[in-house]
Length: 357
Ligand SMILES: Nc1ncnc2c1ncn2[C@@H]1O[C@H](COP(=O)(O)OP(=O)(O)OP(=O)(O)O)[C@@H](O)[C@H]1O
Image 1 (cartoon, rainbow, N blue to C red):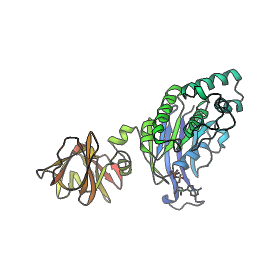
Image 2: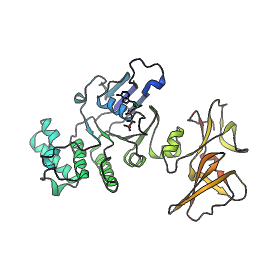
Image 3: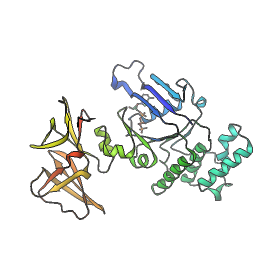
Image 4: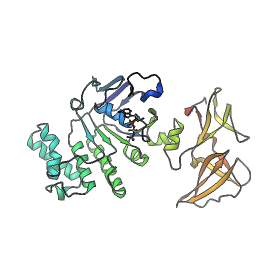
């Protein structure tokens, strides 16, 4: 296992990039801790595969370096990097048994036979494949085959990192959580450095200690699931994490006063003058609806009752705006939004501005 350092790393698929927009991966400077479980999360085309391919060695970055521990591996081919990879679709041999498939990466690396037998037996146990160990992989279900793929990645104890590229795509939705839980257990048991690419927030938040959120080639935030929820560093993070996502509404800010919809809200922090696009962000969980005219008027378009709470959807100042209310809460016909000022984030050109206390 290794610490992985991304040192001023950036990549453009153009030979002579002219501007930031030409970079599929904008500059990132970051250290992935040894033994950490990371998820790379973002929508299609945001640069996840580009970053993963640079880590695996399939792609040489146009700028910057990548280090495994102290060693600069930027120019190394994948096979020189000592990493394991698990892909979207199972990569296994149908004519081999489950046990032979799991043993294969170790046999290739000439690990002693008794060591192979021990590791394969351990892996069969943790993957709950005991009753199928001596069956040919042919005829197993897609999720069983993908379990074997995961096992083949995890059976090598000595790898620098294990990279997972959307590994649960082929798995039935109701089985996904089982494999996700299993992966988490395996991470605790073996402590590998794991990097898991997904566009699914549930997968990212349940698997990872730290989530790396990407948007249009930029790493916009790296944080624990709690940090991404409590303090989104970019409006995209607020929108992408949470269901429904954060409300984002254009506003103006002067010092510690926010102006929105003809109303003034006193903020707990002061802000230097902000040029350009200024928005306030607040999660629907921190909005109350008032019937007595207190707050900013909201026109309600729908109320969704989903068990323990209700999602109230509507418009505020012409922008989509949601509130999450407790199960029994009244939804006034003429509602206005009362926003908790301590939960408001101020965003300048989409990035969070922290202000001064
Ligand atoms: N070989 C390539 N040549 C030119 N442009 C590319 C190449 N591969 C990717 N791109 C572009 O780089 C950007 C990032 O793509 P990338 O595949 O890294 O995104 P992604 O987040 O992995 O998307 P997906 O989830 O759809 O795989 C996209 O605009 C894509 O069109």
